Length: 114
Image (cartoon, rainbow, N blue to C red; front, top):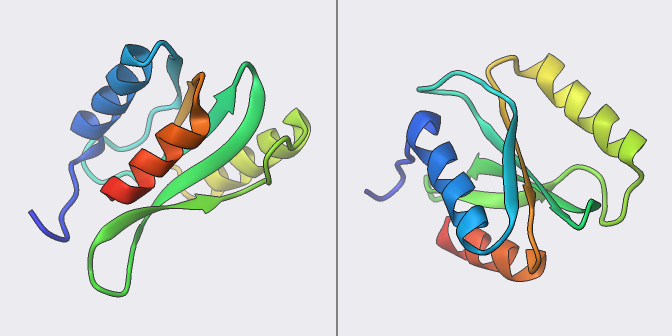
């Protein structure tokens, strides 16, 4: 299914299961539109912010993940402010927090999968 993407009602549970299968913790911080809402992943490791990933449509018409938001090890207030602004901009946004042991590997696998 080139260029397509799963609706969040299917993609979000899969992301949660994937993080938990790798021994991590995953939770939905904000539940958006089940069919067309955007998904933003907040990746942490032991409570330390690592990255935020958002799904974007690239120039070739395919969906890919890209880094967004505060840099690694940003303070929690900076991350909270970023997430608040994103929710105000897009009320249908899904915010998913993943606290995982090997965030760099998870991010590399996720961004390479699209």
